[in-house]
Image (cartoon, rainbow, N blue to C red; front, top):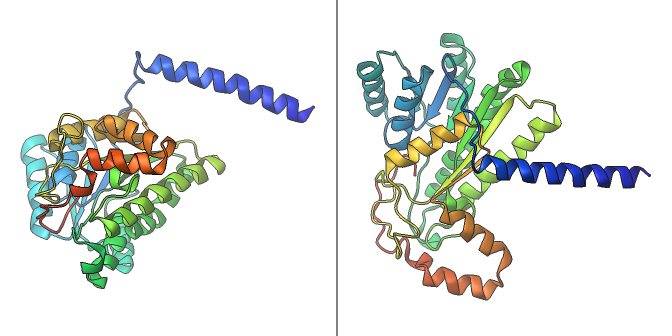
Length: 306
């Protein structure tokens, strides 16, 4: 009897959630306010991190900026002050170091207070074939792109859970959903970031912390300089994203408590095909779309976020 009741309940809820999802295609969810929230962004000294900091400042949030580049971080703070008249709190932090993350996090909690929106945005890319990648750079990719998320969660999540209020945002990558030739260490680190964020979302729900929201962002290449030289065979299908567009989409996803955001929309289809097509056919389509040559002319600048 319990099996019958549970199965019927799941079928009813499945129907309801499907109808709800269809309804939300035409009537988007209401955006929440972030005024007064404390937003901490890693990798805030340039690129998407800087743009998101400016946008959250416009929306009335208190801004905490982390970056290994002190001058870039200060420049972001200056832009926030000039544009929105808000003081941003700046902290120089090497996100490849667990000890430094904990040290700077303690300083933030003493000087600013509890963080309520954590955006793990800092990232690096080597852009080399696996056998050409120095061991130290491979380790650095894992430390910055994935392990840093573990330590920032440990530092700031307890306060969110205690108040059942907060938002965890992982700026991952479409390379965290599908492998890319020439990005072995980067893909590994971003797959790890996605897996960690998904697991933590479930852990929060299991602990009854439904007030702590999560958003996982998986964009294609963004034109910030980090992937300078990377190319796309069909820009109408897989365009190199403009930073302003990517920033607007990410912030809007946070305001709507959207759990997953992939950009452009074609990424959703590509990932679905990856998991449904025969492997050889998937490889054939990947080659057709130019996936084997995305990094053929890569230059990059060796730092910041994608």
